Image (cartoon, rainbow, N blue to C red; front, side, top):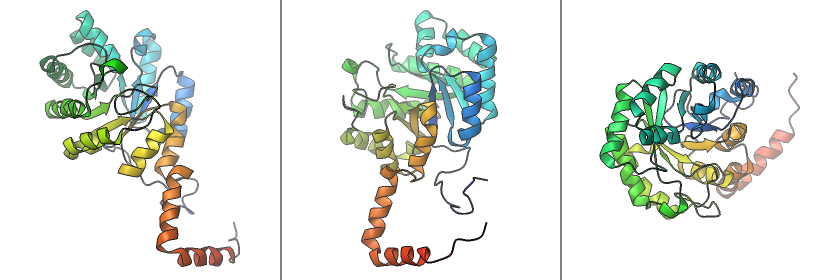
Amino acid sequence: MKAWAEVFPHVNGRSRKPRAQATMIIDRCMGLTNMADLLELTGDFADHWKLSFGTSALLGEDILRRKIKLARDNDLLVYPGGTLAEYAILKGVYPEYIARACQLGFNGVEISDGTIHLPAENRRDAIRFALDAGLTVVSEVGKKDPREQPSAAKLAQLALADFEVGSSWVIIEARESGKGVGIYSKEGDVHEDDVNTIVAALNGHLERLIWEAPLKNQQEYFILRFGPDVGLGNIQPNDLLATEALRAGLRFETLRPVVERMEQEEPRTLAERISHMLHHKVPEA
């Protein structure tokens, strides 16, 4: 039970785990102790744990297995970053990569072509191969190079194709910076027309869409537009609780619209409620 549950029984507006609309954590270099502490504190709020880009290939087997086990013990989908799959495809060892991911204990894998060129047929085959191995597939659409950005319509087309072949989630690429890539401007502002295009094309799959949103203004936009359960990705581990506070309306950015709406709809009732409340005695502990 949450510490303030008796006072705020509905403080968190999100669905309970397991849930379709996910918060994806990007783990760039977190030790076991810090990871365990974080999950003890905030594990209820995370759904996916991604070991960023190709970093898991640099870790010793024992510590990697322990990180994977820790994630799975906390009901997380854990997977290597899509760049490692791209590297495996480039080196001609994708089947071995998938087999090794299973041996190490990963329960998911990310398929992307953010750096390499992967024809549509090969992309479908890569997804099917991972599915046949028993892994949950999270695919990513978009390019990492700001000079090679697909249109929003193309992103939507790719995402729809991935869903149709069997991806459980599709991520909209934004990198760790959230600037100048995908649906974001160089300053990190949301291109709303691009979001509208993607939403219109993927209307039946929105709950399985993960918007990479590393910046607070981006998280605010998606939460206010789609609600507290919206799928968000590339959340830094130490930002997880702050992001959850945004989801729950416990920060200025998402509490302010509630206050403004109440002031417009019932200003007198709100004032009377506050006055009445403050004239009550503090309940005994």
